[in-house]
Image (cartoon, rainbow, N blue to C red; front, side, top):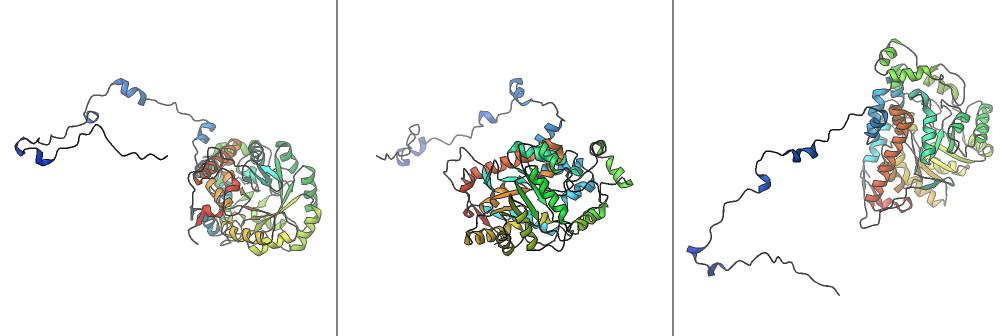
Length: 443
């Protein structure tokens, strides 16, 4: 039975009718009194004591990283601690860097549509990708020359991923060998990213090493027929390894820790070649094969027995075609804006690829990278149809800010962002996200 409760205040006495009170005896309005709380007084020590909680300044790496609340905070730290050339190699993109800027803006140009009155007391961020579980819907993307950014490089990335329960992808251009990464993170889920070279024997050797080291997924990158025009690297005179010039020596005076670590650790070595000296563009152009076709993908599918993912997909048609040629998944990616400027934006491409795969009854995994700078970005991508996401720059900012601890902090920030965003959307697990949760403002 429903009870209706009428508002009532028993402390208020109904005012008498004006006609019942003679005008001569009606009370005059009292002057407004100052509330006691607003009267001036001399503060007591007991009032001041709780306010005088002075904290001892903390300057440790752990305290510094803990103060970072966003990936952008880690980027600021990274910029202060890393010489300009390696920082710009990470932070920069091709030509006018239009693609990178648009990719980040794409995540800003959305509106979330939250549901209310849902039980979100427990948030589950776990998912499955390529047949195995991942504790978070994000993995670490392949990045080249990683120990150049910070001496712990791929070791920090793979170990942080192992601890977080997410996949780690080693690049062909990585500065640690396949075997060393497997040894550093023996219980991690390690993937290997491959550039197909003109020398197929060299490619085959890498494939065999990746399989022997326990990598369950091969990610072939297909958007590097030639090197993009990365103008920051050109202006900085970026070489592999970094050269000691007058400019770099002056730069080192502001970042002594980076140079000390760089000079006192093993020189840079690569997953695919032992030594190299020259510009980044020269290295890329000497290794990449501009003659690749879908027939090469067929050869790779026959050769590799694990999961095969194609990275660098920028059209719906190519996404469907690589699946027809045996790919188990695609990564919608424009190489972080580092190849073709004004390239398609993966986040914008996502709904079309999801629709096409649904029509084809395809169960191929859809992954996405480029532009991700927060956990909210990841949730938006998942809502629009991505099965998984990858981060490159975001984790490298953490690496440059504080080594392994900085990568851990990156993943902590993203996890907290994702959990909060999902709770505010009224969603408790990844499978509950739908396109209805996201509205593209520029569409």
